Length: 86
Image (tube, rainbow, N blue to C red; front, side):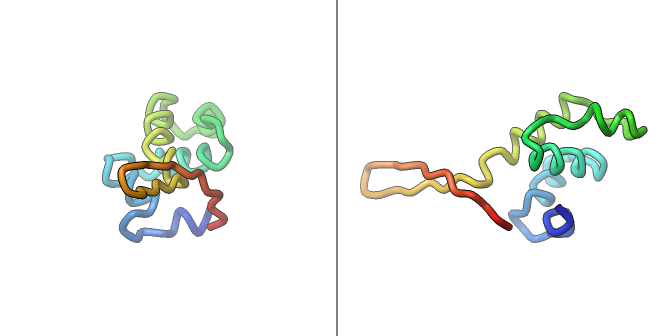
């Protein structure tokens, strides 16, 4: 998670969320929620960080397909899901 959060390279999840106007708190919650596979906004609200379920859902949807590789061969299109161990 620390590696993902510190990554400010073009095309990184953090940069993608920043470009979509998610603030730092939302970005952290979205990235942890993405790793957990569920919306963790409720947990952060208990800890005093004001972030809405809707914003986290929107952010998770935005980065949902980062681990999908589309391959075009001629006129056929195949989509492969790959496991990212970054």
